[in-house]
Length: 389
Image 1 (cartoon, rainbow, N blue to C red):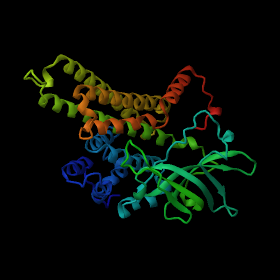
Image 2 (image 1 turned 120 degrees about the vertical axis):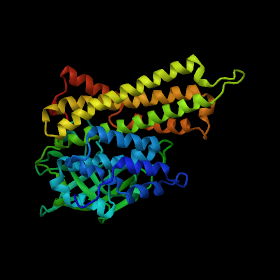
Image 3 (image 1 turned 135 degrees about the vertical axis):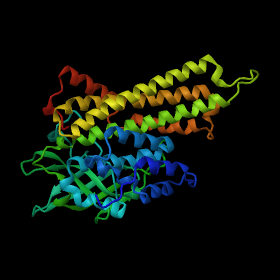
Image 4 (image 1 turned 90 degrees about the vertical axis):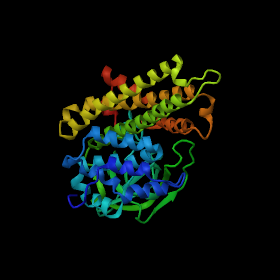
C-alpha cells in the first residue's frame, strides 16, 4: 500500500460536498469517491494513518453530506478495515485490487442468529450453503445473499455459509465470492422508502466454485474469530447515524435563526419551547459522541491485540449502536416538531432524514435482541455452547 498516494479522506469529503451532482444520481457520487480513492483509506489503519475515532469522524462527516452514500459506502469501508486488520495475510492479493481496480467489498453481514448453535441450524432455511469439493480444492456455494449495499459497484462478497461435515455436524464458514465467478447473478429487488439510493440488491449463487484461496475461515477454525467484523459493523452504523443527527441539528439551528413566527416579528430562535427542544437535541448528540469515543478507544485496544477487551467491546458496541440510533431518531423527531408541518414537505431536508433514520431500526441485531443479549450477558445466563457467535 505504500505505493499508493494517501489523500486524507476528510479532504475528499470537502470536495465531494462542494461538487455539483445531478440530483439523485448515486452513480456520480460513488464514481467521484472511487476516482479520488476514498474507498482505500481503511487499508492504512495498520500503518497508523488513522484511529477508530478518526474513522468515526470520516464516516459521520460523509453522512452529514449524504446519508445514503455514507451508509452504503461504509459497508465496504468497515469490511475492508476488519479484513486488513485481522486477515490481511489471507486476502492481501484481493485487497490490492481495491485501489488498482476500484473494487468494492460487500459487508460480511451477521445472519442474525445469536442463540442457536451451528449444529442446530436448519439447512433448508439458511440462506447460503457450501459443499466441499470431492478433491478438497474449494467449495461449491449455492443460495442468496440479501441486501448488498451498492451492489452495482461491489466486486467481492464475503459470505457466511453453512456446510455439513461427513459426520453430519454442521459448521459455519466464511469465504469470499467474486461477482465475476460463474453462477453468480443479480436479483434487483431493492424497493425501499428508506435509504432508497443504496441499491441494496440481492445476489444469487448457483453452484459457484470458490477455491480454498478465498476461504477466510474453514471448518477447522472458529467462526468467532470474525467477531471484529461485528464490532466494527456496530461502530460503523453508529457513526453514520450520528452524522444524520448532526445534520438535523445544523439544519434546525439555521432554520430557527431565519424563520419568523407570524405576527411576532421574531424568529423561532427567540421562543423558549424551541430553545428547550434544541437543548434536548444537543444533549442527545453530545452523549452519543461520548459513547462513540468510548467504543472507539476499545476498538483501538482490540486492534492492538488486547484480546481481553473483547467481552467489554461486545457489550459496548451493542450499547453504542442502540443508543446512537435511537438518539438520532429522536433528534430528527424533535427537529420536525420545531420546523412544524412544513417538515413533511418533500422540499424539507427533514422529510428525507426522517425516512433515512428509520433504516437504523433494522440493522442487526434489532433492539429486542440487543436488549436480550445485553441482559443475559450481564446475568451470566448465556451459554457459549448454545451460541454460534
